[in-house]
Length: 124
Image (tube, rainbow, N blue to C red; front, side, top):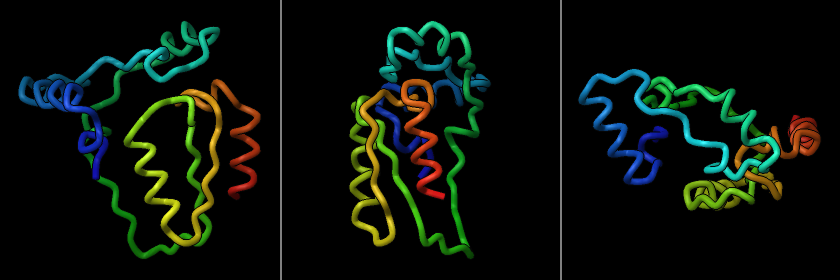
């Protein structure tokens, strides 16, 4: 699946409209508040964000010819998302997946940078 397959209906409609118009990049970035970034860093995060090119929404990923034995799913639990909850459940049902949770918004690298580093080291 692609990112466009997994966004809410409103965002999907906006992407389809932008594609029909040939708008590139298709949409402005979502706000840091939307992703539940901690209030102290929201202004900085918003200033750093840029629109994503259309292909980042439309391109499907396919991994072939490789077996990845050690896999980690990190869920930023402070960002409510049925999509990420479903992805976590799919990963948890597969052998070889380690599930980790952080109590922060979607931009974990901003809200919990030390914890992210620790989890990346653990996963490696």
